[in-house]
Image (cartoon, rainbow, N blue to C red; front, side):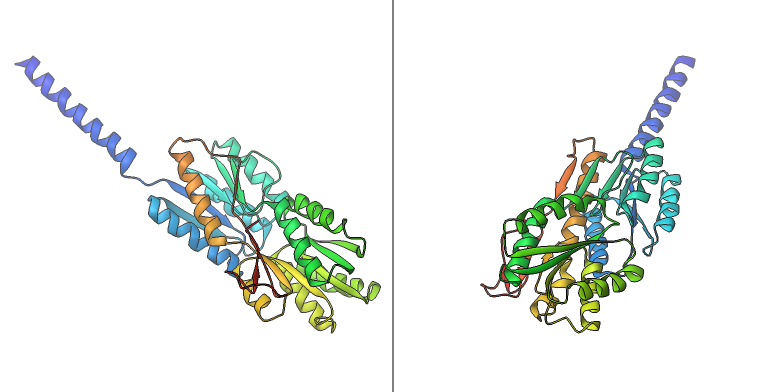
Length: 314
């Protein structure tokens, strides 16, 4: 009798334990902390949409934080995400250098880190999801050469908040260097766009009143540079090639920009979530996931899916 009761009790305990383990493995969706730099730009809003749509498909829960362009605020927000013990951290840094601190903290907490669009300097990240910076630089140079007819003075505006632009700028210079009639007169680093760019644009145009073209290496830089050219009365003289999201496309179509490299933020978001999902399922993930950007130009050629002219994705 005692033996029969004991067997029944053990069976009940075993069933209960089985139900608990099942609930733990199937009843609670994995949580991903997502740290975004801002929601002011359409690029980041589209990025968020891509993240959400893919997460819904895969049954993942996202906790978003928006730093409003403040790197110190983002550090505090990420520390909060780490304290919540999310299953993974997806980081779009406001600033590459300052973000390294929280990546190191995540490493210490054994929380896997994935970066998106902008890389972090410091710590270990499993995967970076972004465009091929080298190909972007080459494509940007070709667009600018087309816009200035392969001759004249040009300048680069480099967004110093993004560490992964080095290979892009080097590739851009490499293509320009093959053109004897093109003179790269300035490579201007910009850390704080609102505070620094207006003055540096004024200095650039005063030193080079016959400037023919500019390449701006981020969407905020592109928009701010165009505003400066308009203020200085040079918007019809200087061709701008920009890098950013779909919001730049109509500016190419209406002639405000000579061309742009269009990055698809919704696709970036989807690829990022799919990559994190693979890791959470204990599958191998690559160090780098590239999402092609597409060059568009308002200077002749046949219609393409992103503007008046489109080459193959970079």
